[in-house]
Image (cartoon, rainbow, N blue to C red; front, side, top):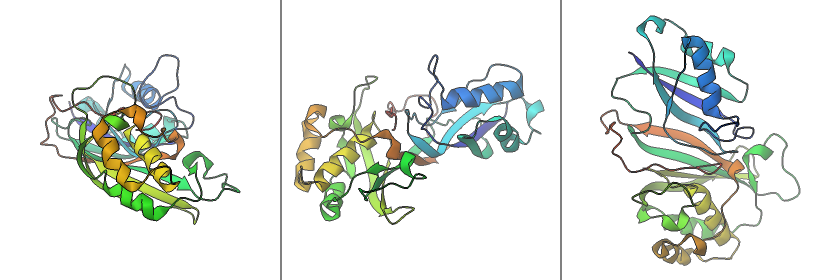
Length: 266
């Protein structure tokens, strides 16, 4: 059967997360319900990454196989006509049968947005930012560089499904201006993430910005492999899964290291 790759965008505020959970509203549940209506039977999608309640996405990717007889359907238009207004399909692509949304992925980019004005937050931006003013950006920039490279990130992994290997490679970690003058966006790209790893790194970065840690404290925190020594987790609302990169030739057998679980976030 032909394989379709769907790129999803969603506002995570009113979802209990991406993955199906009994009795909860989830992105997977909404998408699969629509696909089941279109295909006249149960559907299960495979996802590239898991996001938790409150975490948003611009570039989540899922795949599914569909009957050849359904290939003439205008998939993006048809799915979006049935989805609720806080999730949509931005792209539909026919991919080779060996493509797998999880195991063909080579890296992901997450963005975390911090709001710097204490006296107000624009109502339109409140679901997407963490208000934290007076941060020392110079110190934070220095701290960010300690996370780049291949490290054991166990100190930045929250409790979740046990995994074999807590090492990950962070290719880039940088900041850019946000949508408004009061926002700064921190973007991180890596080959994979542990449970709530991005939010834990941002929590650590903010601690540096507030003077509670020094940039040079980061290597020792990483080396300790002890979550209890690192600062608290940043809120989920500031986190967004922005983009996922793929190589169809990557292993699709399921033998890659365990992927991240995102607390209401990555």
